[in-house]
Image (cartoon, rainbow, N blue to C red; front, side, top):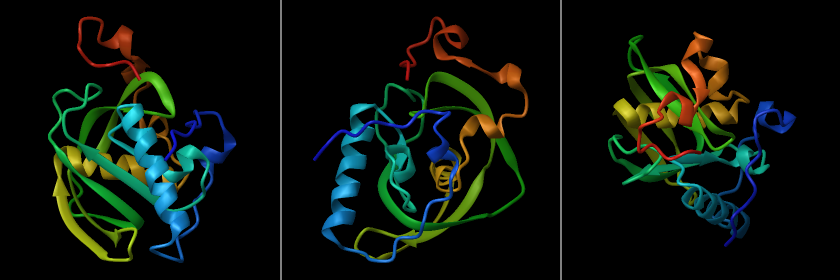
Length: 177
């Protein structure tokens, strides 16, 4: 459909709480998801949330095959997740590098739950219920944070672990955001 502009950190819209989807399997919801997918693929994202393209709905998509922004990441199945509910399975946190389409050119170390149970719906209103770990859990938490007005730099515990990708990883194949 269309590649949409991605809002960048500093835009007040990114700090608002998104509204629940109340109607599934509608032309408007399908069009939104196509635009999100086109935008995510164009920007080599691991995921994207509706608020990042200026839509206040609780919709995220994610999926990772081979991605130049995350060359060493485990694969994550392509998923449309609407009205998600996340529940950590344990209190164990793991720190890991994250980037974001709304914070281009930067990376930071963010603590995330290592195991996660998430529920929600696909765009047709079919139930999704998964227990995940590792990079999959990290991606879901990152994308769902956008629905609550949280960007990953807000979760960084030591600002020394935040900087420009090309400075942090000068000899790396990690693509710049």
